[in-house]
Length: 412
Image 1 (cartoon, helix red, strand yellow):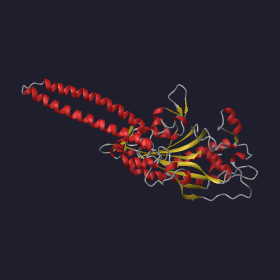
Image 2 (cartoon, rainbow, N blue to C red):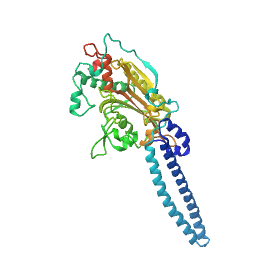
Image 3 (cartoon, helix red, strand yellow):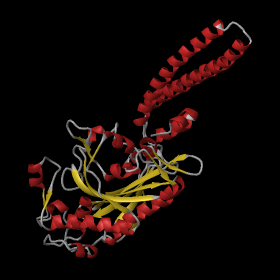
Image 4 (spheres, rainbow, N blue to C red):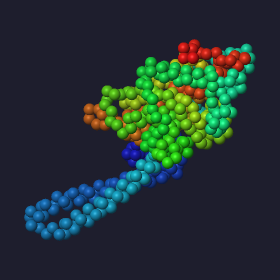
């Protein structure tokens, strides 16, 4: 969540940053009105409290000197009643401000490039060589090797579900194990977490309230199927005060992920790119503010090195403001080369949210004098289904068979 106190202190600077993130003028005007009202009403309440305290001190002197206390008592009682009314008004308006702030995105870092959408993202590095073929490479759904059964996936659930069999199922499992081992060797502690989350933790990482339409809700329960392990790993320390020496915390987990893909009608309707259920290995970091830049680079390098170890050409892409996620202050995407599609496609997204999620989830650490909000970071390492299809397309043979990357052979 954005810093409401900072918003009230320097609205124009924060509004300028929020405009870069695509927040419209009407929302900014409403935010300004309610934040100013909250600030003014609190000042009014504090003035009444100060006056009441002043008169209360006078009360003792009046009694001691034998003065008539009736008029003073009447004034004190009037101020007390006024204060109670103002306290309730302040509570209501500050709850309203907090609720509004929950729907406002994070501020982008100053060095994030301006841009309207993904077409204005900036490629910052390309790693690895694209494979060469003596034949026309196919897209993964056209490969006749029996790894993916789209029709039966639809029969079992609905569109945008699939089933894997044989070596395809084994490859999915191999990739999960390899990714977890790779991350663990880079210093990330492995966790196994619930695949459902309650509304409190989903609010903590920013999925609620704004993106409820993209979640699968469990009927009659305060539970949702998780859209990413980021939710669970980040919220392991929800509403906790950590010790300084616990940081940074580097965490990794495999989970299936569930998304309605609301608003994506007509996009990537074929293949494994955009499914309602998919496997992912996630990285999350909880850090001190001064550590987060270094850890951000570590996470990008970890995901990139993982792709390189699989022999997959990819590029690092700095997202512009128009393509930046709700909670992210800065994001670098990794896009893997898909020869069947003849293009790079996103396979990982690594974000630093600064203290945005920590403020929502009340994640703090104690230094010598006070409690400080942590920074939180998250990143895919990697989307397993997309890695599977990338291997299928990059390692395909003309007869449809797939060569196995060297690092995966022991897992197969």
